[in-house]
Length: 313
Image (tube, rainbow, N blue to C red; front, side, top):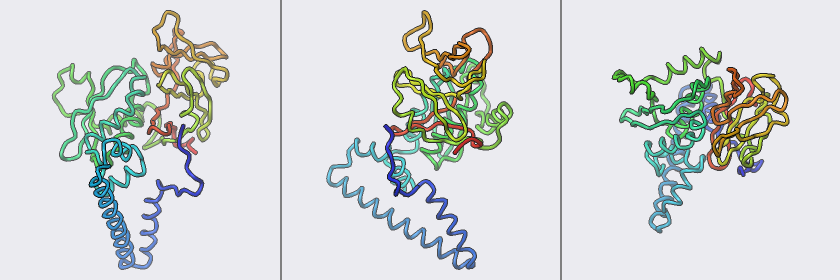
């Protein structure tokens, strides 16, 4: 179950933006006023950073800073962010990137793919290789942009760029430079009609408590979403049947006739169309219909779904 924050808890995610706004506002008092504001922020940050470093040192001296405690610190988004700011995060950048990729592998697996970390260079470039196939899934570029890039940048904000190669590149003996993420994003924009960072991550508390085999429908902003859980894996799609274009009211999960254990077929209660959940919503009824999958990310406490910015709350 997702953790619930107290109504009195500040929205720390916007604190940095507020600090920047206040510093900018101080510019109205002239260059000296701005310099003093920036110096004040630096001094306060350094002060608390030194105290945090000393705190960790004391815990270590007492023999309490074991692997379990370090993992708990690294898994808490707020604490991990503060540790990163002061260079005190218990994990190096390569470990953090690998952990980030691990968090999105269930979603990549639902598209028949995977991702491999090749290297993190001294210049801060993360080099990745996409594996497997999305079986013609039109959301492969969306997966890269919203799942892989988002997770890596959140875990390692100090990286400078992400470069990607595919298994097809290797099979063809390509020896040239890796494919820049920006070029893949350009293809995404051309396919989907979106521009820039046209999506956002929204926490959906209902997803955390969804039981295996269950189907749930809910709203995120103005978008309707249908989600289901198969074992420990979560899947989410736009709540619209690709054939009859009606919402999935009364929809249920079923196992494909003669299929393997773990197969999951989402059936529209209206037109009886069948969609393969694990293959990103491809229709199994002999046509090219395809659901619109939505990337999911979990931090262990809450699950977020990616939705277009135009429909976000």
